[in-house]
Length: 183
Ligand code: HEM
Image (cartoon, rainbow, N blue to C red; front, side):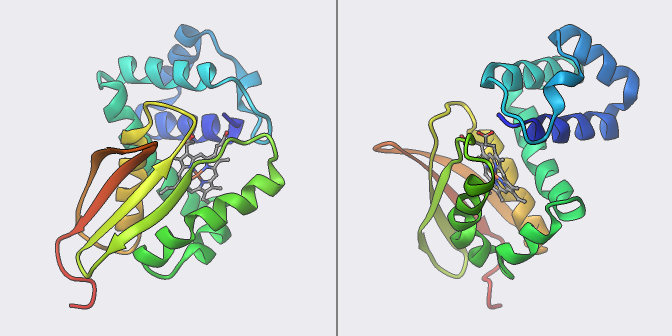
């Protein structure tokens, strides 16, 4: 994955555990600054090694770490160089989810080497949104849950997110809001 993902993981570790823990993680993962150039692509194995080592260090499972990283990515995107991308993504949770594919497609133009996921809103009502997610990568379901939780938080909405299984090639997610959107 692109170095921008690694940089964001580094920021999360620095924020939660500080620079000493980060140096230990780099050491244990056998990585150095070379893997953190934003606009450069690295083998997924490097990204997964980074996440797995950080999980062990934090005493969390890989899934818990991926989920925390998803939430962090959204919070950080809102504050950093991607703030504009987040702003135009949508003015509500539903609109943002409907625009996810368009947003990633525009990133694909700037980063032709990126393997971006595809999302679609399959159905929705005032309190529930069902989404499909396609990726060539496996094992990122909890990352998606964290990202969706981050987006909910961005619009000050309470609720829960769950992976609800596969339908063909699609991984399905359900966002359940604590209160109807128009309430
Ligand atoms: C400022 C906002 C965002 C930017 C700039 C961005 C950009 C990117 C980039 C560059 C990658 C890595 C692709 C690669 O290295 O091959 C990626 C991956 C991913 N993005 Fe986004 N993204 C953003 C927001 C979101 C949001 C809001 C979601 C979902 C709710 C999302 C879901 C994902 C997922 C699940 C992946 C992992 C790749 C995979 O599933 O195969 N992203 N994104």
